[in-house]
Image (cartoon, rainbow, N blue to C red; front, side, top):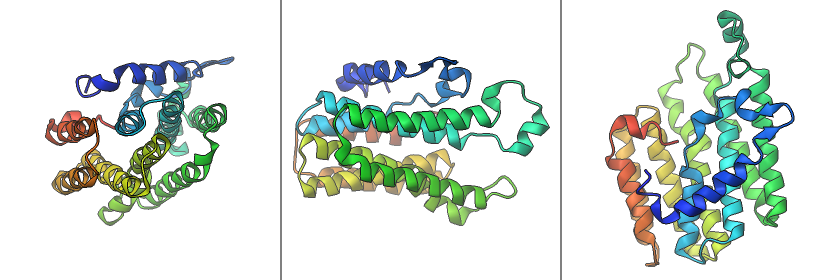
Length: 255
């Protein structure tokens, strides 16, 4: 992935550095209370940066928006992997990261940081769509938990869960990233479709639904080609092709 992210590497480092400043709190580093190192993938901020780079360029506000989406992603992943009470009792875990209370609080803290970052960067205009994305992520989590009484989500519910927990998030990265950078309404629509299809493809892979992922990769490429030719569009195409062509194990680590 490093070669794919090369055009935005410096800006990704800015996102990481800014976020790292918020990980040390009075009680200690957040990683002592939740497994944050597991969720350090850069796909969300990379999509924001790549999209903005195609239009008005990567400004300080764009970097802040990339940071916002990464806070949302991290918070959702921390909450996604929280142990249930029966698991905690069964495992007799002593590490607070394996429990329930600390990861819940870390996830909530990260959601709070998404809001403060919006305020500090003066991009509160995007609060409504971002809040809606968070609602959809949590709705997906409710459906997932409701459909896995035996530890397995029923196949019929997986597609909807992937849409709510991941596809809408990546769609937002692309659409709002483009909007902030100056993309027009029609371009925003294509960017949304691109991010949505990419999110569905990645979600299918992460759920071992490999036979269904390729059609979504094709849809993502089609949406990208539907955009009025813009500078640096091939960077996103390269990202899609990399995710599509790389081996299964690497794919499952994407998001």
